[in-house]
Length: 222
Image 1 (cartoon, helix red, strand yellow):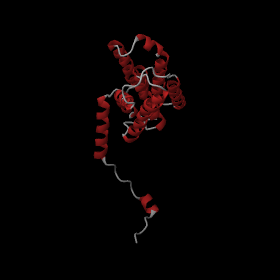
Image 2 (cartoon, rainbow, N blue to C red):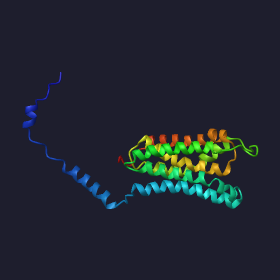
Image 3 (cartoon, rainbow, N blue to C red):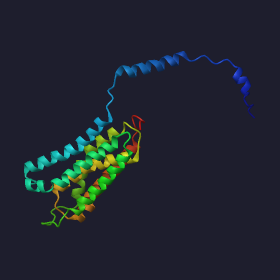
Image 4 (cartoon, one colour):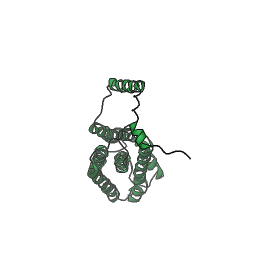
């Protein structure tokens, strides 16, 4: 049986001299990191990146579709309120996801995204022409157009400690990209929107949550 240590004897012992070599190595490493002078980007800049990648890609898609005749100016004007709602939702969700003290804003952003999704469904009328493509094509195209914004969002999220609500808001912001394109390119009814468009939006949110939880953050800042 191992003899227990005597606390009194330990307190009377002289302290061991510090490992000077180890301290010098640690100090040299710290000085080397400081010498790099890596720029520290504020959360507002990062939130702007997420908004620009999502909203910018959506607007670019609208311009291209208008240029090639895939959508008319009249149809674009008729959908303008819904498109503006999607852009606003993207911005609020991105801002909430990156705000260090934005817990209340994140809750409001989730509520706004749910209201936006419900509006997309309720605003759809009856289709004027039968569908020429299967419904899953919309889901696949929404997921494809959201890849770049999703990568940007996940990279930015690694700059802070993982929080499920923060990752959810980032995913909701990214998901508006596909929903925006769907409002321009798809004429199907509300059942199609609820079953295929919103499924893609929700799937992107799940991917954002899983990736943010899996990848090691660069910082554990709140």
